[in-house]
Structures are given as C-alpha cells and as structure tokens.
Amino acid sequence: MRLTRRLLFAGCVLWSLSVTAAIEPISTSIAVGMAAALTGFLARYQNVLYYFQECCRPEWISYNQTGLKNDLNTKLYGQHVAAEVIIKAVTGFMNNKNPKKPLVLSLHGWTGTGKNFVSQIIAENIYEKGMTSSFVHLFTATAHFPHEAHTDTYKTQLQEWIRGNVSICPRSMFIFDEMDKMHPGLIDSIKPYLDFYDNLNGVSYRQAIFIFLSNAGGENIVQVALDFWREAREREEIQLKDLETALSLSVFNNKNSGFWHTSLIDKNLVDFFVPFLPLEYKHIIQCGLAEMVSKGHAPDKEVVETMARDLNYFPKEERVFSMQGCKVIPSRLDFYI
Image (cartoon, rainbow, N blue to C red):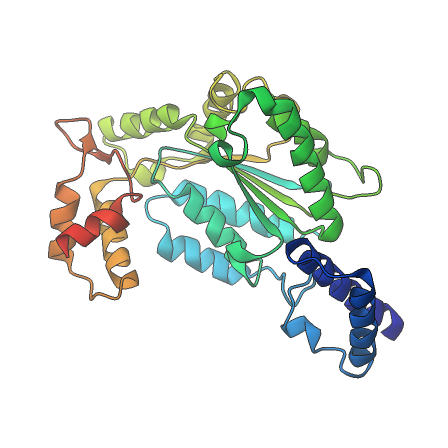
C-alpha cells in the first residue's frame, strides 16, 4: 500500500514536471534528478505534496452536494427547473461508483439566464480550484473552432485533447460554450467518448463530465413561459416534462444549434436537456442586489430598480421578461452607482 502511494506521488510529480516542461523547456536529466530527489523526500513526508500541487485525487476533487444545492438555491435566480435537474443529475452521477457512461448535460436558454454561471457552480463544488482547475476544460466555439474549413483538423485536435486529459484524470470536466455557433458535425467527433463503453483503447471516460451551453431552443422555452403567463399560471408550475421533448427536437432539427442531426441526440447520449427560463423583472432586481454586494457596495434597492426599469423587456407592452437577463448587469450597474 505504501509503495503504491509513493508511486502515485511520484507520478503526480512527473506530471507536474511535464506541464512545466511544456511552458519552460528543461532537460530530461534535470527532470529525472528532481523527480528522484522529490521521491526520496516524499518517502518521509508523504502528505506534503497533496497540499501544494493539484493532483487527480480526493484532496483536490471532491463533490460537495450541500454546497451545490445551497449555491443553486441562493445564487441562481428564477431557474427552479434547472436547479432541480442539476442537483439530481450531478448528485446521482457523483455518488455512483461505477457509472455506465459519462454525465452529459445540455443547458439551453436565452443569453443572461445563468447557463455559464451554473457550469461554474458545478465546477466549484467538485474541484478545489473550480474553473481554474487543470481538470476543467472550457471550449468556446468562436475562439477555439472559428473556421468551418478547418473542421476536420478541429475534430482531430478535440479528440486528442479529451483522450489525453482523461488519461491523466478520469474525473475531468469539459464545457462547450456557444454550441449554437459550433460547425455542424464537429461535436459528433467526440460521440465515442460519451457512449456506453467500458473503455476505448485502454481509456475509460465513464467518470468524465460533459456540459454543453447553447442559446438554441431558447424560443421554445420562452413560448412555454409565455403560455403559462397568459394562462395566469404560476411560473413555478413549469416542469421539465413541459419543455424537454420539444427542446431536444428543436435543437436536433436546427442547423444552427451545433446539434443538427447529431448522433449524440439520435443515440440518446445527452442525459438531460436543461431549460433556462427567461428572467422576469423581480429576478433582475435580485441579480442587481447581489452584484452590488459583490462590488463591495451596500445593497440599494432603489438604485437597482432604477437600472432594472431602463432595461428592455418583452412583450413590449406588458414588459414581462427581460431581453438581456442578468448578463449586462455588472456593466450597467456601474452607471447607476
């Protein structure tokens, strides 16, 4: 047992040195010498390195179920459906010691409704370093895959990146933002890693987490929210079953969704399509007050209400739902403080 632990430590050290080498070249002899010296040190002080260098171990990766539930209930506004689905999906997956496939979540809704924020909350309650963890990987379509002519190259690079990082840490997280701007067919290249395979070429992907973020399907979600409002029904009555089927079909048949005719949907590899509802005026107030606190100001409801009234809402006359959500609040609020 002790030998196994020492080998794990040494592996972690060598991995750290390989990362350093990629940034600042050092000779192989120096690296080996450092590893040998550190291995001897670790034989005497076995727990030291855990607290200084991030490794794929429980000291750095540990699910905080209470933290996730609390964060979603207190920091995410107006998204009762998304919060419930995320808590159940992530908790069920993280508590399963032998999952049959990776966890795959697809988050949909208009801009500013909280999709990026939720992916950040999930990361912060699994990884000690949150979004800055070496095991959390964020891809943005317009930044990482900008040219359609290079789609084949992107497919190869994406496959290699996922394979390499899951080999290092099975509990890796991959977040794909702007899926609605993703070139058709690109995301299908990672389909084997999301499927029900024990392993592929010696690598198991079953403990990994994949999260897709997209504005696609937002119109369907808005329409359901509007229908409930026009029927004088409470927003909190909306359930996942009212949205999920129509959402998955609209995304599958939308050429600009990133999921157009993708086998990820056709083969039922997306575990949950998570809808984010359009935000109402009261939710904008909540976002504004929280933003004031984060900026170091005492919450001032009068200031926030002034800002909120100046934002755009729809339908135009009734002004029920915010068009920009909470995304513009950090910059807008500075003007009113």
